[in-house]
Image (cartoon, rainbow, N blue to C red; front, side, top):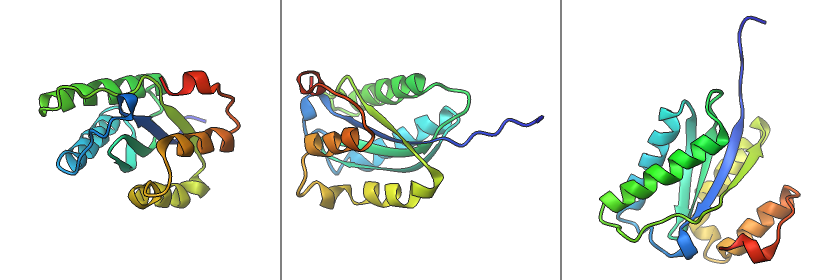
Length: 148
């Protein structure tokens, strides 16, 4: 086949360091637009970005030419520096992240889930939500190392 085709979707989740509530309503839309720009610059397609004060969710179509690790390095590194430039000098992201594969058939449900983050987190903590994803995707984890 002379053409290379690639369609990989990811639901990405990462939090602020120590889950500090640093993403307020004044910076949130600009931060999400900045994250979307990074995804596009890396050859991906940001489908939806949303979150709450202490973490973000991104639904993206990943680039076929950039590794997941490079995407995460650029997303977190560049946006952390950008937040500092916006006057959030204490802003940092937590070290880890979750990247969960999404099938094309599951995109509407994933999009709806991310869209409803604020109402969802009125009743659920980040830790409970993240554990749910780890269990749903059958990822083994050790609680002692999950939250540093």
